Image (cartoon, rainbow, N blue to C red; front, side, top):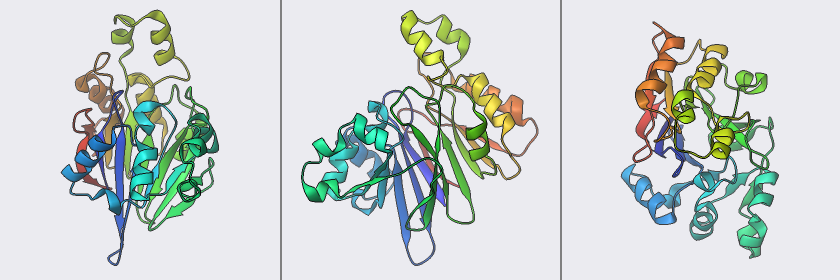
Length: 263
């Protein structure tokens, strides 16, 4: 199994996950927070044809995650997977009016595993200010990729869900001091730093320290605020937890995400 980011941050998020068994290849796009043209361009840069996607999975309804997902699904006939709450928030069936378009939608629920080709997905709940947000763990049967972005704080449930992963994409949205001293209005600071907002570096480090890391080979710091964080601060927070453990630490960027990595 391998994965690549098309971009990660408040201006758009999309993560490509791929598994091959020799006879077939399964490709899933987790979130689609860019315009259709930009998604097409960024997929082409990863040598992936949009029409080869087996599913688009949406974590929640915020624009930097759902973006052009409905339009892309309709154009290329790609199945959409999301929670019922997310679908209600974006009025998915009002947008996909035609019966054959509506048939593209597949609902998922927390802790109910589902399969797309050779990839198994485990959705799990997170604290975030959306209708029914879910994050996901991907598995090809041999390796596990955990993804956690857009969560305000650690919970025992998400810590358990992310245990035993081989690779982890982990939100490191902001440094608390940088956010406090930023020019953001108080209401926005409170939202971002709240229990249903985004993970600060120290909160992400708390989660990393709490999960089972026995198999963990890579941690990718994701969804960094370009105003309220730096790659150096995020990586330092992760390094403080990992110490001498042989785990690679990387950063996903808004402009280019990151290139293909293997689990």
